[in-house]
Amino acid sequence: MTGTPDRRPADAPESAASDSAREADAPEATSESPAPGRRRVLLAAPRGYCAGVDRAVIAVEKALEQYGAPIYVRHEIVHNKYVVQTLEKKGAIFVEETDEVPQGEIVIFSAHGVAPTVHEEARRGKLATIDATCPLVTKVHKEAVRYAKEDYDILLIGHEGHEEVIGTSGEAPDHITLVDGPKDVENVEVRDPDKVVWLSQTTLSVDETMETVDALKNRYPNLLSPPSDDICYATQNRQTAIKQVAAEADLVLVVGSKNSSNSVRLVETALSHGAKDGHLVDNADEIDEAWLEGVSTIGLSSGASVPEVLVDGVLEWLAERGWDDVEIVKPVDEHMQFSLPKELRRDLRSEAAEKLRA
Ligand code: 10E
Ligand code: SF4
Image (cartoon, rainbow, N blue to C red):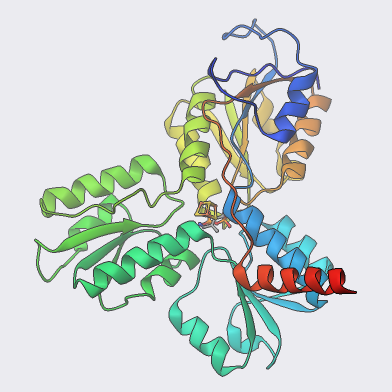
């Protein structure tokens, strides 16, 4: 790989660690339009791990260190094959339901969140629980509880069957109706059209969600909006970056697993914002050489559940085929961090205190 000029806004502060390393040996910034025949990669930033994923993956790792294997995890901790396989090798056991966990064992709830009934099942099964639900998903759960208490009909925009939607709906099943995209709006029925609020899954397409909201507003002019965005900062930032990349790309590659909603949305966003072609790949092995035919500029990004090592693999694969000129396209900076789940912090603190006393 040659250097990586960075197309950040002039006043942008320092970039993420991995990109800083790439920038260290960057040559002069290149022009916007590539010379004919020039092969370049536009590397979107931010990409990869968000704060909620980072926290959840570290929670499983710390739990394995602190309590020893096995540690049970309900549902994939995040929707990424590589992450799940790596944690399995360290002693995590992934299950779909809490009743698959033997009595008295430790179970971690995934970053996507769970319904209150799942907490009850764990209590009944006498399980010790660590809740790795992302705080931004918990925020949506709390909104659902509040609006249900105020007796609103809640229209939850999201993808049917997705783990996060199942968890959020479980907070107020009698008040929540799922709206799966703009086309689903005509099927919605509410008790009182003047007492309706919309909420959403955190990892949706920003553009499609706004279409759905507009269609809902046409039907319910007094529709209430949530107090702050439910589509989280990480989803929004990754979509902003891929839009900029897509405008110049012949081909966009997004690293991510097929069941990762936010990763799938990045491919769709790229295709609807100028990319001539786009594919989701779990890693470099899934790239088809035929996709590169006639391609000059390749856009590259990764979903919020994707470790950077997989992007590095794709960059190496591309460099071996002549795409070794990498420019970082960074329209937004990102610095969010969340503290570990409270159950783990408590135990890590008491262990540190015991060590101090010893
Ligand atoms: O399928 P999603 O995009 O919701 O999940 P992911 O595990 O790929 O990415 C992290 C997003 C979470 C945990 C939902 N807010
Ligand atoms: Fe949290 Fe957003 Fe990451 Fe989901 S995508 S885990 S809501 S930060």
